Length: 79
Image (cartoon, rainbow, N blue to C red; front, top):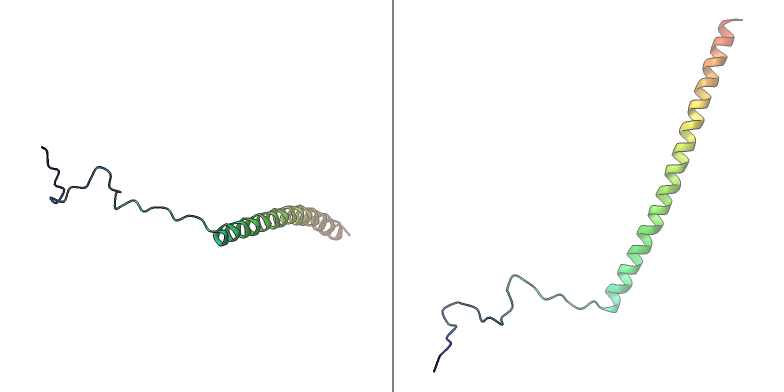
């Protein structure tokens, strides 16, 4: 008869690895919190996109005004 003695600090072949923690089941509260965070992220992303569009518009308007100012400066110098 074969006796299996695991008292010599060797783990049972069916034992869980101590480094691997079992994942806790997601509760309703964590799922709701996750959904809220995702919605917040999407809202912030859309707001950032809007701001980037506005920055691009302002940059092009700024370039146009610089050119107009240069033209006016040349006109005034030629008076």
